[in-house]
Image (cartoon, rainbow, N blue to C red; front, side, top):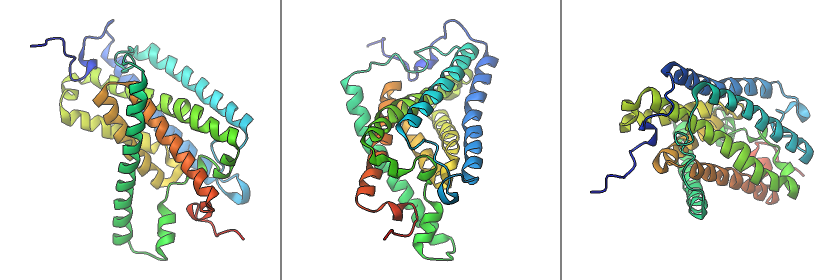
Amino acid sequence: MNTDLPPVLPGLDPVSPPVARHRSIAMLAILLVVPLLLGSWGSDRASEGGGEGGAPQAALPGSVGGLLWICGLNLAIFLVVGAGMVALGRPSRRELFATAPFNIRTWVLGFFYAIGLRIGVGIVLAVSLGLWTGLMPRSGPVEEVVDSIRPRIETMIDPTVLRDPIYLLLVTTVVSFIVAGLREELWRAAVFAAFRRCWPRWMSRRAGRVGIVLLSALSFGLGHLPQGWGGVALTGVLGVGLGWILLGHRSLWVAVVAHGFFDATSLLLLRLLDAANGLERLLGKPPGP
């Protein structure tokens, strides 16, 4: 019998050097609260308008220079906060699943997982929409009901700026895979690591893993509150899928690549929809002349 097989979760291995439990709990609390604070702040900012005609101002600037600036700022803030988390909880690369190999197989798995995530998210949202429109009283056409619960993508990005090929290249690479994919999956891995440290027996059980995946997905979804409750639902479902990928493969990189491909293809689909003159309908605007 092979006795060298890894445990169900590598975080169950002894931590070296040992970290005081209260430090891990503090790290976990901060990690779970930060997305909620960002989501609340972003929602208040979006509700204030500031865009053209009082429309919500997009989080991503509409120029290439502005995009590079906001990406650099976000990464700088992430590095500062990340350094604080490292000093507080001292998570190891192994606990963050960062020792997994990063190779062509990682890219292939991530690509196909992104397809599966898109199908899964689409099914869940379609079923939810059907239940919502069937059970809730409507005061107008179905189109108005759909518009009232759709993800408010315009609070994240003005889709018309994707017509610039350089801007499109940047958001489908740097933004999708690094600013979003790497940053958010490191956050998820750190949340899982803190839970495994504090409650290892609970996390060794399937029910425990289900619970932390759902909790992290809820926090992740609420961090996208500026996109409305439809955006919270979409990113929450996405968070569940990415959480299982992270735990199932014990690889930060597979989750990062899957996340990156999901975001990149979402932006490409927006560009294709714009080219097909379907953007106004998606955004709930009357068709142009």
